[in-house]
Image 1: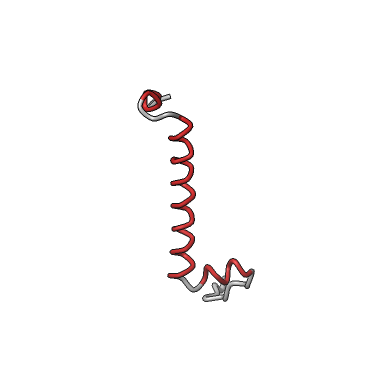
Image 2: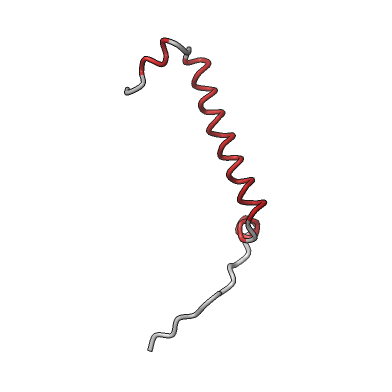
Length: 59
């Protein structure tokens, strides 16, 4: 383990929940930003089909 000595400063019973909690908070913030700043993400979560924006004619 590259950073194994961190557990001599911070107990694993404190450090691991803080680390995992911070990862969860970041994930929630990213999803909230996607929901509030895009028009396609709420449609994606609701299961609506994407609109066709262009077609390629192969001929």
